[in-house]
Image (cartoon, rainbow, N blue to C red; front, side, top):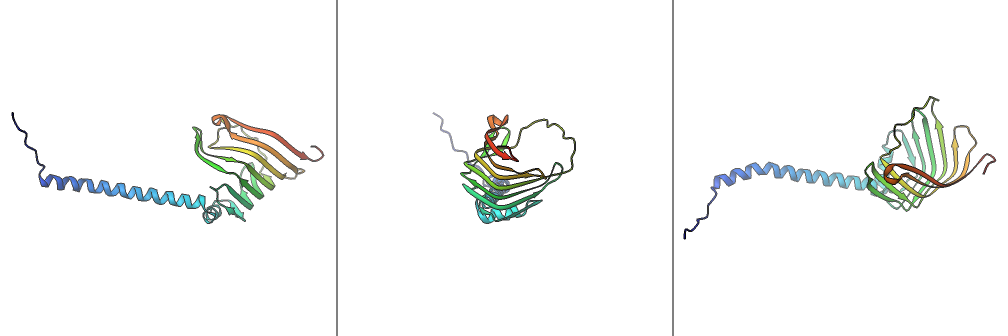
Length: 196
């Protein structure tokens, strides 16, 4: 019966293989460090009050004050948020914003990148200032990259340009429901001028 002799790899071939694999291993290690650093930075921005304040202060056209809590936390509030827009929206100002029972979702369905469920989204006052009047073009799609389910939406006062204020707005809402195909508002109630 013939016996097989183990083959040995020459030492020079092992050294050559190590030299070829070393840059690949260093690149993989560097990639892992970059991914871990970016993940830690995003977590700090979204999960800490200081990170949230830093992020909101750097958004273009956004002025914010009185931030309490973190974006990626169950409770979050802003005393005043002003967004300078363009086109149909010149500016929007929200005062006394509170969000409770927030649960965030990554890729809630194929059309949305991020989703949020909220037990309560409340604003004491919202002021909408329209831009120049133009003939609006019909949107090609109402699909959004965001989905939201709001168990309770409350706005004490909504002012649109110089119209009389809408008061005590209450509703439940779902944006991007049923896989992004519908937007729903339920149990809507409000007072406007002399109408209830």
